[in-house]
Length: 112
Length: 114
Image 1 (tube, chains in turn green, red):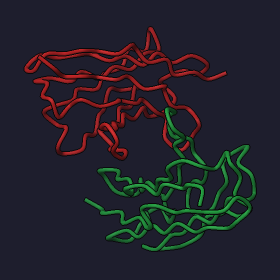
Image 2: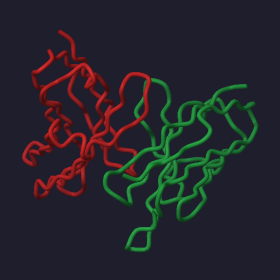
Image 3: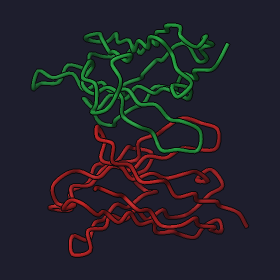
């Protein structure tokens, strides 16, 4: 199985600040079709996860441009700028290039 | 508007089975894969498997191959997951989801207790 190593576990931030979350995979996430199936989700307390970024860097509909994804191969990053209260929760990366699909262990974004 | 409406909370005894449902409205369930994901109390997300409702083909994570059975009823636009031989370790919230969209169910809490 592809191991997704997500860091940090906890991320204190000041409102208005900028943060980065890292997700590293144990093998390349480049699919044989040439696409890289690495996605980012936010799970707010008591809610289902919501898609933020799909295929590394594509913002999902309605997601503010404060969120950006980057990376390639095995190393990926989610950046959040001008953090707002609604951004707080747990962020997960997900790879769907290889079966079984695997999630990162999560990063909790909280107020400093 | 697309909605995935999951069935209500379940309390199951060890060794028994439960069957969860995920009723889809707003699109034809045949058109895309349905995935199931769980989340144990206070823990992260774990992929269980997916079904192609158009033909019933399934793929499971190894650890769920003898635990979960995914099915779909295209006539009622509903996906199902049966969990068998329940153990306390199966206590979790179970989500149905069309991954890489906003379409997730609200989750079903399964509690295993005697």
